[in-house]
Image 1 (cartoon, rainbow, N blue to C red):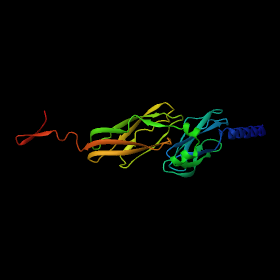
Image 2 (image 1 turned 60 degrees about the horizontal axis):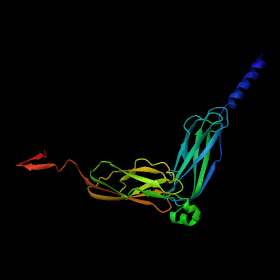
Image 3 (image 1 turned 90 degrees about the vertical axis):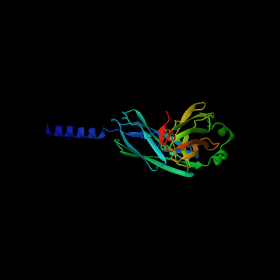
Image 4 (image 1 turned 180 degrees about the vertical axis):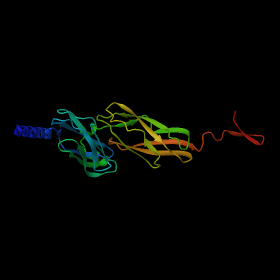
Length: 257
């Protein structure tokens, strides 16, 4: 009897040790090939839980700040699938890249590394590298206008300029980084990839604190091979919008009525 109990206990320990999730990826390396500078090179690695317990991904760390990871946040049950996404920002990174994302989970193998690689080319080089047929399939960014005038605004305010972006090309348009010489313009949020024939609203936050008539140029990167897009934000920036509403009445100053 004692021997039987020992065997049962050993069997339970063995079964318990085998009760784990197993994370199985379709591949652990993705080569983007040639990427135009300004594009957000994105790949979604798919995996399946081939074990017998749920898998929970605790964290995904990229090897550099130019790569942004995302992943399935909910438990992945046995037999079900999940994903780990890597987004590489190619702006200002000409040349060959090889980046990794490292996954930490409760799977049988608690740490797993995935790799993305490719070569970033300047847009004019990219155009030369593509065939006419490939160029015809590329995205095309068209704006409803290129200038927004806020009129009079108070220093310290953060008004929003809204532009409509339309993709008149034949593949997804991906908007990238934003740059301005004044460092006073930011994106409220980055629109998702814009499908051919579709439009999206681009919201720019203007945080100009200098006083006077301002005209700041903004460069918007994208995977449009025709080049970066230039925008201009204009405003008459004043210290206080309520100031100047005072007039002299006799020797005292009173506000307008």
